[in-house]
Image (cartoon, rainbow, N blue to C red; front, side, top):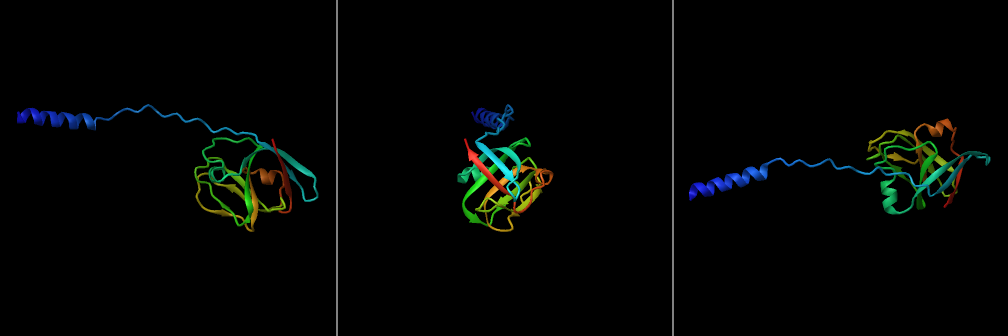
Length: 158
């Protein structure tokens, strides 16, 4: 009887330690959702570029941002909207796309940049002054479009 009980215990331990094969979990890519249009304007009001924009307005949307996205087109952007102008700081945790981060005040004027933010880097990327809006575009586009402090944005929601 003791031998049978010992055999059963060893069998149970062996079976419970057996490696199980899990099928690879497939995740769905997060796709861009156009929620409006955003126009970048020179300080004199001359249009620079019009972009498709996705808005980040809730706490969850602002905290998640462009995390986990694998790609982004030049004409796509994300605009973070805060309730008031405060010093802001972003980081690139779980963000796979290099970005230009553009800080914008309550008057919709560009006040500072963090260009070529490195994917997956968790170092803080602060605004130099309080900002109410933060625009994220693909890295390099702020320079390609000659964006400068004092330029502005306007946007419409669908």
